[in-house]
Image: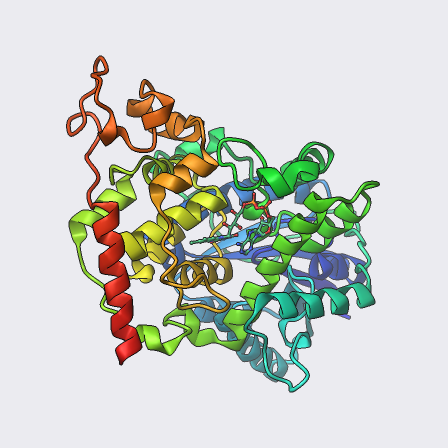
Length: 471
Ligand SMILES: Cc1cc2nc3c(=O)[nH]c(=O)nc-3n(C[C@H](O)[C@H](O)[C@H](O)COP(=O)(O)OP(=O)(O)OC[C@H]3O[C@@H](n4cnc5c(N)ncnc54)[C@H](O)[C@@H]3O)c2cc1C
């Protein structure tokens, strides 16, 4: 065994259930944590996530400090060239946990060859999933494309294995440095950006993730089945950004759920959502082309439209449909959006405006603190009807009825679309039908008229859908 070890930090900003980090501390005298920050992956593309990573680095550094472990950051233009520089170092071993994205897994293979040539010891550990994606297959060895049989199978495989052992890293007697040159964590993020306000809503740390989970399990999971679709209440866990950057391991989430004395409908529904996350990872790894293209090929002929004005109105939350606008503004303000509203806003873009799902995927990618390729791509393709086990394209969400059903009193709309706060409840989701005048409010001046008419947009979407069936 070498004296020095590196834990290559990627999407696992946690001490608990971090197999690669624990292994390094149990087997080596000197351990350093190295994070490679590739600017091009974030700037103008994943700005919300960039903020999250920056804060995560600052918080994780403190956690590692308690273990006498140094966190070293390298700013990089390419993972490969940075890795080549690291490979020039002598006498060390390296460990990391997998990221279940095809490009990352391919990169692992490349690195392994290089490490082998240089005789550098390494070990790759399971990442933040329940099962390795290739453990779950149909009897005929092909991947699942439908959620229910996938999850029945995946859940059984996981439960048969049992929860993995949750061993903690060992504290070092003294700190050691690995890199000769490294960057300041502050260089990862320029202050005074639009994402700065996220600090009011999030604390990207392992401690906060545990706190949120504890609170959710003691107060909310019981009603999760009924409240998970109501965006004005905190009915869901809001653990998604912590899961995406690995402040908490999904096995820990499930293990804590298992400790509940009473397991009702809420528990079952919640565990199933963890299943959807697993399903997304399975899909993008078995069908990596879906990260760029429609999974269902017939959608390649869909007549999408290009309309910069509509796309911009959608992004800014100025479509004139209150529930859509509230969602888009929640996203811009907090870096997160409620799942029900993600479905409504996404459906509005691809069906009412007939703008390609890739435009929406790109915008969410830039604005979500919980962005991950698997869930985002699968989510967009599910809404658009071109994904696996997707909502049929012809089922078109009516933004007025969706608002009236899931935001009955309009509290969610009033929270995010301040100009509508005086609108009476009965018109909150259709302010254009209001006959009486409201002081200081004029439709078309303070808030836009709907940019498209719901019925006409619906008919036009259905007609477009007929076209792909003809081809
Ligand atoms: C268009 C669209 C884009 C999306 N993009 C993302 C994304 O980039 N990152 C992301 O994490 N989720 C994405 N989702 C899925 C879902 O909206 C979020 O995971 C959820 O809103 C997170 O809130 P929560 O943590 O309170 O979820 P909870 O309801 O508390 O669920 C617990 C966990 O289960 C997982 N989960 C829940 N719902 C889903 C789902 N439908 N698909 C897959 N996993 C799920 C998440 O990891 C979540 O944290 C997207 C959904 C849609 C419709």
